[in-house]
Length: 53
Image 1 (cartoon, rainbow, N blue to C red):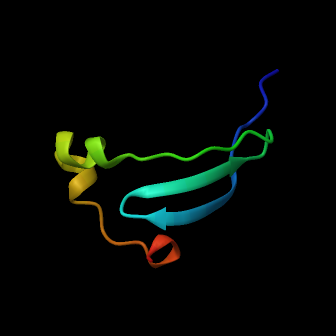
Image 2: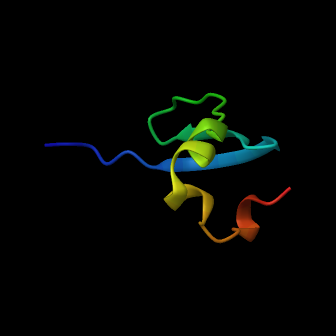
């Protein structure tokens, strides 16, 4: 059986950087800026007030 991995918490740092913590206890800084410029579908995503600075 597989355990469902989910984000337990995510903090905004600056720019595109966030610090997610997963239900497995793993955590770390993520900078997805290159994805926004590489994939159009990411760049047209609507703003999310839950992660705004």
